[in-house]
Image (cartoon, rainbow, N blue to C red; front, side, top):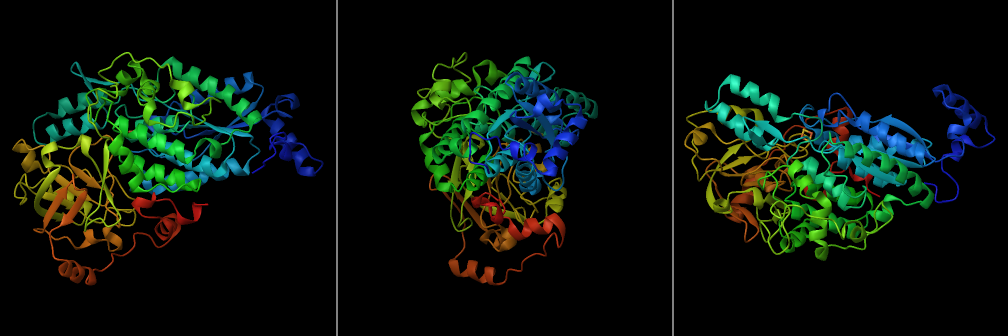
Length: 563
Ligand code: FES
């Protein structure tokens, strides 16, 4: 990209003697702009993931209008453009299959167009990491405006969280403890405004991470989507991006290794989604920064979990915002952070948050009053996960974190869902549910199947959790004693592939291990007989994905997209 800060990159499109420079000026005026509106001004792209197939981002056209207001005020000229959007609950087989595709769309749309800077609008789970990956690779001055969480759900006078409480209530329905009418009523209360899921799921985690990395203005992530302050934040971001173009302040100067360590620390203190491990590794990889699972574990051990928000805590994102939001949390953990990291504000992280007020010390805890002395995500190894696996121990049942029990193996997701309804399924509270073929190749696309639903038979007995293990991911809104991201995955011959029903599984969270209790020779014998399943795709984007996706511990980016 253009490294001369004095000359606007867009001028090479609009201000030269070649024919197409004239043609571009002529054609852009077809949009009704006078020459004075755009000529010689910083051209700001507004990269919008709005889509009616992505309810979380449905308000981003309105947010874009506020950004434009700010851009005009500061002397720039805004142009909004779409990319593909990834609606978490609509896309099959999983949005994760398309995260890298969206990142490529974002990167190439930025690179190919006459832009000097970009404001990126995101919210739903994968849209934030995809845009961060694309912006990192394009490396033009960039600022993020996240869409904000929904208002709290409300059902029969009780606050409910999207995802987290929806799963709990649906379990009541599928075990006959709730009527069709009650479920229908809850449907209307569960997600009652625009915005992304309002628990500390993947969306809230990743938008908070965008802020912790220094890529948003201070306080952006926590403002509820319908709150008028979100539009004011968008307007301020529009003004600021014009200044950033003049300063030539780029993502590569902000998203340094230390900034990624800050992001991991914040994620741990939030009790953030396990998906952050995969996404942060991929975003950092775009900048040539290698994050390992050990980085996450090391930081988790020294970072207390402080944020009393579901699924690990009791409250919702709206409460978190009223308690002070992310700036208050960051201020509380500044001793654990690299406070000198630069941010898009032009000031350091510590300068942005050093005096942020906290209005509710029960929701945003201090370092000396944590909810847990360690962060939310632990990394496991063992003979089932030579390259690692993760567990969100803060959302697990404490009595199951050290456990051994017989495996009940599912090799097919659809069959699993049918079997879990059976009253004669041979499982009990000691069983370890095992799901294979759910990783990047096996799913395909690394779907969120890891929180294997509890067998109906056990729910009816009042058993709400058993150990579940897979090479899959799980939604950040989920909870339970769930081992995820087992790497290498079973579909390419990882050791998980050889587990059979009845084998003893040992989960030793303290010892950081997940093992099958079999002699090495028996594991080797079974691995020799492993037959790789047929690939899900033989053409098109799916084949590109299978040919180039990396494993979970490497971030699942495409190998050819790393620098
Ligand atoms: Fe978009 Fe939950 S469905 S964040």
